[in-house]
Image (cartoon, rainbow, N blue to C red; front, side, top):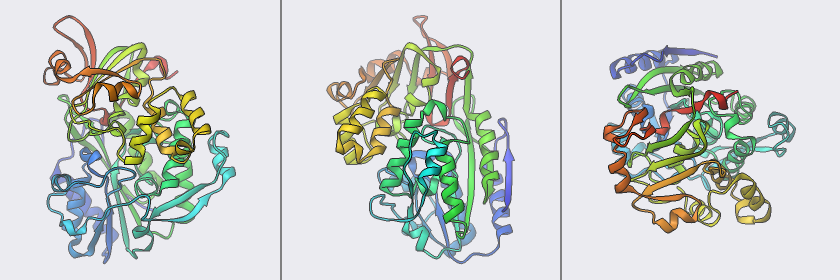
Length: 424
């Protein structure tokens, strides 16, 4: 097992030239390869630096890079403009689309007794280990999994083998993994490297994928004082040490701990990055541990035009709404459509304010009726943008012209916010 690179700190800035030098030095240590596939995230992780890294891998290997498989999970396929922007020098002929309902093979299962043990008995079924058929049968001599380590609602800390088993996983595996995280409790997991689902994925990799030539290229990205994403950490290796070190830095760089609760939060969703509540609800679950009971969370969402990234999931969100967890769990028990799509059920739990705080979604593309039908309050986007102009706000505490105190977050994908009193 090898760790080729572990560099960075919360104050570091890794510039593109330095990134390329480190990456090329690591790939040179690995040696020549003839058939390489890269698995980067899609455009929803545009700040991860996975785009430039993938282009650099192509520069290094040339024609020996034969496939690029974005880890879509259940997301929409990447649009052409997203590919152009994220992978500007990559030939489009290399891009493959992951179809989570058709393109997967089940390579084994994590035993029910192990799943039950690590979830404290909350889930007691075997978990199917599924992966895109291209990675399993493509006869690649190097699989480079690229992505950003950051606090995550389903697994505690994003990336590492999640990129493969969830990002290129199948319907059953994705559904059950999301539900395991939701049932266990996202507030028990976010910002932690050792979680039930991570232990399940580690079991899957150790028992079924040890023969695969997997290399992880993990980034840590933090906001600068103006809120712009900056690459502050780079970790390259083929074992858990690589991931653990990246997690340690991410907790420092991306976990914002507050000494008092937030009573009014305003969160901005960049329209290019967030076009659904499936993605935009990062505003809810990344901030919920910092929100006071009775708080108001205002989400400025100029690009949000749908609920789910998948048409079937979109319909389920519209049907059941972001209701309190007990209501969602009862619906899972009584309704086959939700029981058969546990990822949707998990998402409803993740996005629920649990009757503890108010969520005001400010959209142009979703109507007031649509927003209120799923359990949120509706806000007029243009009016809210005048009152809470992102260009005039800074990340953190702000005083408005009316002497109102708000907490502003420019990009919820870059961190996790929690009040110390909720972590004890």
